[in-house]
Image 1 (spheres, each protein chain N blue to C red):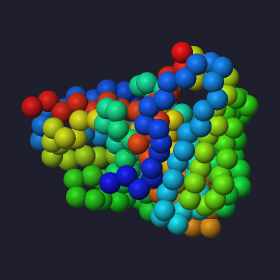
Image 2: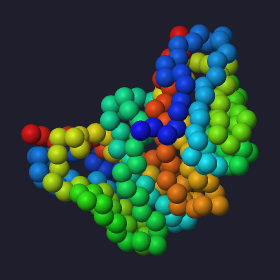
Image 3: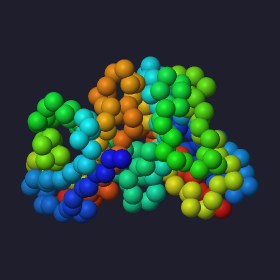
Amino acid sequence: GENVEQHPSTLSVQEGDSAVIKCTYSDSASNYFPWYKQELGKRPQLIIDIRSNVGEKKDQRIAVTLNKTAKHFSLHITETQPEDSAVYFCAASRWGGADGLTFGKGTHLIIQP
Amino acid sequence: DTEVTQTPKHLVMGMTNKKSLKCEQHMGHRAMYWYKQKAKKPPELMFVYSYEKLSINESVPSRFSPECPNSSLLNLHLHALQPEDSALYLCASSLGPLNSNQPQHFGDGTRLSIL
């Protein structure tokens, strides 16, 4: 089955700086890679996703890059704000999410004022 | 706003009780999922339903019994649970397997405590 590794487990950055979270996956058949943000006591909320036929996707301060050859994808958050503090999960799926998601272990992002 | 509705929000039950978790969506999604999330851990897939049929069971113990009565509703029946089953149970939905690469939307979850 799929295995998703996520690093770092904790990331502390100064407000206004950029944050980068990295994930690798094992199953070359995976073709869909979403990122979720989960605040304490809340549901996971999709913030951005990328399909295997795309190398990069941006949405305002958030971007995701995918390297299929290396089986590696990353989340980039620019101009970080206090409300970005949360746990971020990467995930992978073989059927665009229809077969369920395999999540990484999560990154606790802390934005220092 | 949450478009996937889960009830109850909290549930405390004894090991001999029988209870059910409910999940509802009215987005026309044809795939629905149950995940289990322990504290400070990622969600772990339990079951996948596609077009009201069970398509994936991730070797979940039989004390968890899923049911999909119609395309909008997903239940998880609980019986003889163990203390280690205490967790947040998340339901999610997506358009379905004929619409690949579609995001999953999560409900707020049911926080389950087994005494």
